[in-house]
Image (cartoon, rainbow, N blue to C red):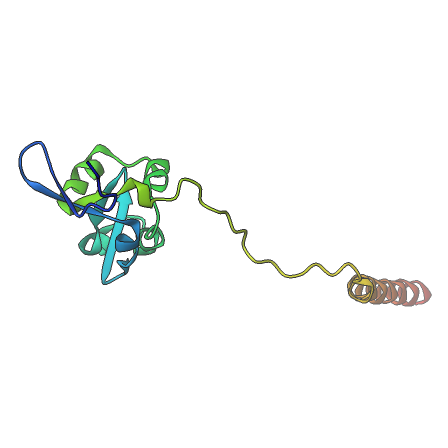
Length: 148
């Protein structure tokens, strides 16, 4: 007996068919006009909820194309949020298509230039020159006041 890994539908315990999606299928729905999320091995079409989401639509859109369960749990959603999810349920995810380890890519940062001598001198001068001018002004004021 051979079992297929990529199942498109399966039978639930109540006799109704449930759709099973791959992560690649769900990842195609990643815009404000068509937004699907994977939370706890279930797929949700949250397109109609984007405008009403208290955290804004960008939060939901940025969670597409991956398992958003940790993101969802970290926020600490209310029980009413869990109840609302049932309305947006479209099927299950084939858990074998979700990578077990996600590669972390750090944000791009500008290259560090160790030779910043000229920049350092300019910053020091920007600090010292106004102090010098202030000192000269106070000295002139003090000197002219004492000679009168």
